[in-house]
Length: 316
Length: 250
Image (tube, rainbow over the protein chains, first blue to last red):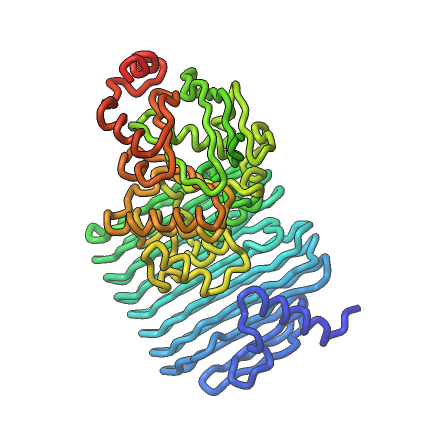
């Protein structure tokens, strides 16, 4: 059995090493929550932000409200994880940003020893008028084994609100990943950016389904995916933007790089269900060009190190 | 007494897609020397650079390459680079999402800010470029200069520079040539591949290449004179079709 404080230290140290600000967890002026399995190890809020979290049989239920006109100056850190090699964790969250508020959330999902594990994130996000919300989710998995990762988000955006979602899984095994993001930008002049960066290896399976419906007049969206697949991994990307309002503008941009015996399918879908909407797309699947790899090898890198360097930039 | 050789190429032949693109090339580069290979487009100069660097697509079907006395003909690109050979491509590759700082540090992992700034200064670039991406917002000339500064940081024993002046404006060209001299004064040998006689003329010694063959070796001035007075663009670029005719002409 793990010691709780050791679990806290381990999760937090990995979170800080992989994109978190050192010293954020435990700081008086930072909002954070640390969850190991279904146990809430630590939680801290500040005026203007309400956090209600409760433990369930397999994870937690959390409700977070950023009150009207509250500007959260430092990133809110959410650390979810488990140090065991098997089990499940389901995080159900409802996040509401009230009118004129803004916040940046960084979710650290840490499963360094997982071999047979299910990690599900079921999120409902509602952005009030004129609010701005940035959600960045970084996963850290171990080098072996499989983990089922199910990030599911339903996002609704009011007028002039801005949503930025960024999912990154580049360290360790991806396992079996199925991202399912569905955003409705129904407010006038609302803005959406959804980015996925994934590095699949061995026999990982990566599925990304990003859908944005632009139902608000003059709303805009960018769906961007950078997927690198090597060994025998497989990837499927579906990015769909529906321009369903006058003046709506959308773009889908997907680049998948395959090495070894990896296989990739990319489906950028654009649809204009309103005659005054404009949606565009670009997609590319290919190998890393020899000239890029050889250019780095001419500086003394091995072929593998050269590929990793190119990939690190692509997934930056 | 024989001069010491940093690079010695003997009877090198390379074939690609049924065409003999290098036809019995022999040449040498001495320690600390700036050596030019001059020739018109399609002469095979870049192919020679790739073959010396060890690109597998340019593996020789015949001939040998020695570097500092070692036969490196069978060595791969990384082994050659670790032995001290490097190549600056005519068109540097675009690496998405990589900072200039991180790119330069590949050449010298322990480089400090001052080292990086000095390397940029030598190619007429300001320190703020360190925080720019190598693939975005840089002109071809700027990327070229960054590539040259990375070569400077490596301090290789042999730097092969393929058309180092392409994309670099005339004002900066003098600085670029100064960089090569600085490299050579530090002990590096420099092999410059160029189609411009004024660039070749700034070398210590030059070769003239035509249709996959070396047709002349001599002082940079002599090679330039010959090039200006005798060489004309080949009618056909395919060496199989033009080799003997071009050589007869030369």
